[in-house]
Image 1: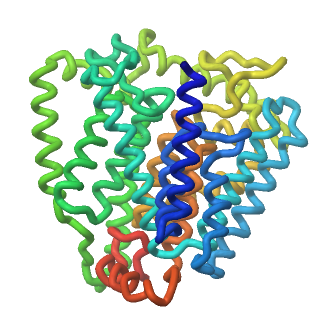
Image 2: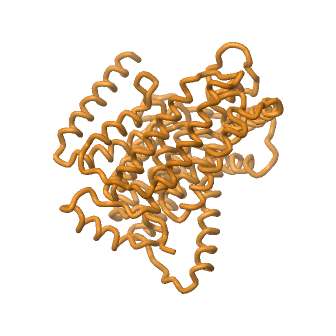
Image 3: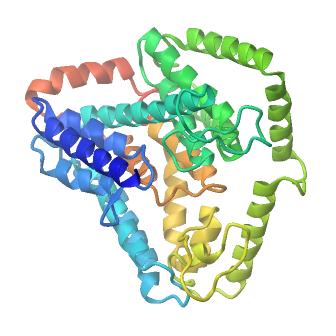
Length: 438
């Protein structure tokens, strides 16, 4: 059965690619597909992410832009990535040297997007990411309502069980649902679409019971509010620019109504939510298995960090810390990354990892008032508990966050009026793909 699903999936992927390449506007279609591929987890061909393969194909499609001003970002990013990847040759606990190649492939894919994307490309990529995230959330809802034959996780945590959607586990579903919530709130959508997208992703963000995503959502919101206050103070005379707000009130009303119905229909769900939230702000209880596991994992990472050389134990070494915190120093480990991305990268590369860590954090903060910057911030905070730094989504958001501060070219002279119109509607405020004007 697994081989059947693999065969059907491969056939669907090939047919989709053929359809995209033969589409009259194949560049926009391929940009959409590239964004959609970033919304998937672990889809690889010969250990190469589908996102990387699509980025190379997308590079070969004509009418791309040439964003030469992005070199000031790409040069330090490339140097930092190569420095970190070089630890695969130096470390004493390297578990999977190919992880370095995957990282370089993802960074290279991000560079391609930065150098060749136009306004229309960036918009299509975000749409692709939103659609796939929402599909994952929709499948999760179908699992909760027993309309999809799938086992739900952790019935002892949630009365309705934790859905997984199209992802391996509920934590990833929660993260991508959070991405869907931010995108559906920030992008300009018709009222019905905004309600549908935001409600679907919000419900699954709650039902997945993924505390990492909850913490990331709250943390991102607080940082965005702080950035808005700082920006308003330093630009006191700047006009207040409003972004697309159509459908937001309807989306909030739908979310409140759905929450009331769910809590009334399943009274136990309210108690489960309260207990789950309490574990985020209080002491981790002994019966909180996942919380205890993360504490043990961090303790083991700190143990490895105590003996780390200047170049670290080598990329993928942090994956030797098992699910319950045990250190598998001999032989091969089933995992290659740590649950905490900063601790994991320090164990892997020590001082060789600092430039890359600094770059990612600085980029997220610099672009905090843009859509890609907020999404990148959300993913980086979530990755302190469930590491997605080696997933394509992080590097698509890195690329779009870099381009958010650039004056992107249009794909062709014929498309320039539409792109200029989009720029005028978007303005330069916090509700755009671009960074706010100084």
